[in-house]
Length: 110
Image (cartoon, rainbow, N blue to C red):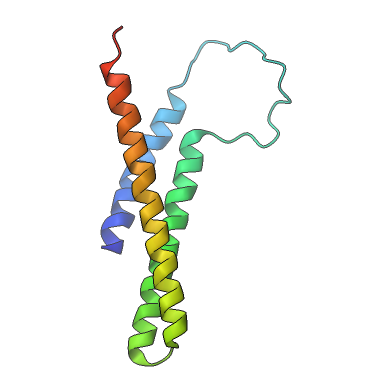
């Protein structure tokens, strides 16, 4: 399952980067901001969140395997699995919101 998520993330990285490079090519008006201080695109933020989620799930899986081998305590296994479950639930909620927003945008009349 982790390998499938990693493959999905690596395949979507190109889409996210392509989407961030297809922004407006004309000059944008200066809105009086501070400039490049801490600028981050939405695709960069989503990529970071997805890689963090994958790392957390991999960590939970690794601790679970260590628990089966007797190298980790039950408490460590439970904490890691609960953190991974929470991360997965958050990722699913974000995915649902993105799909909902896409569907709402596709219903808009032009």
